[in-house]
Length: 282
Image (cartoon, rainbow, N blue to C red; front, side, top):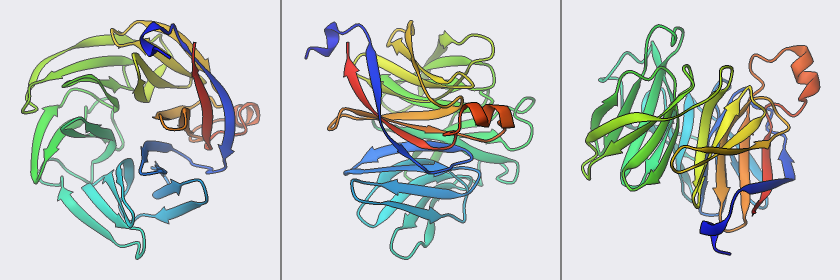
């Protein structure tokens, strides 16, 4: 199929994984494995066709970068961290504590956007009044990319060195344009959600950009130009992230149960679980 000629997407639920996350996030699909985190419970989940493993972490995880045979690389409140899947030992690869106060801030989403490895941080207690930080990490060098976004999320490259990053607090989705060295050339509004809708994690599928809508029970589907073209309805009110398995034509979605009322949990009993959908181009 010529994806360039498609007008939208459709999803059909294939599987529900009972991960029971308080705050599922940070999806990564790589090497036949799928991994995600529960930020609040300090856990990493690893799934493949045969099993689901759960690893407790000492450092608070927020996003998975890489899944290797015996190791997982993830972003945490102390920086880039390696988890040995065999021994469950954690090693801090690149420490962020020299850039900000780690007691006040924790990581919140990030990603590898082509050659740019990005990691965002938010204030633990008062993100409304204290904006966070977004860094580009190259080797042991931390470069500040932005210090005005309060709750950084999404981190999707839509074109070479053009990356969209959401501020979940304001509902604004920003387009960051970088040069080949990762230096910020321009930053502008790419899209803005309706009042009460909060952009969270996302991914790009062909010419579409998908962003999970916290408190929206949906995934918003945009063009690369930032035009909202549809919403994909979900069985959870607080989806947090989505990633596409191109080999299987499947969309994975994480979710949260944090902060939901008894009535909301009754209406959305699968909140906190992880979902696999078959995806089709229309």
